[in-house]
Length: 135
Image (cartoon, rainbow, N blue to C red):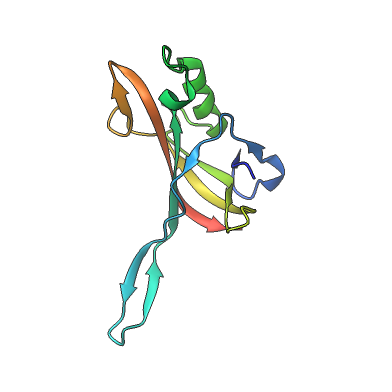
């Protein structure tokens, strides 16, 4: 299943496929705490990172342009004036790759530190999604 996103919490009716589709780092749990008796538990909310590899998707002589970059950000409602946006996101949730819906916060990446650059061209874009809660 494709990764889908909609602006606003609990907006499962508005979910649409991300185009182009990103890679998913996996859903990371909060830190793992071990109690004195040896039992453990997750502490904190889940998070993930979506990654678009521009160099891999483009031909060998070109890079994706500003239109594609801005289109990706607009699918989340991200911009310089709105660096964090509440979203509903559908992510692959199990071995069958069926999607599970979450509420979370999409965060504008801190470019250039969160991107990979080659001769002033952005090679990949990483959008962190924080505060994931299953809905």
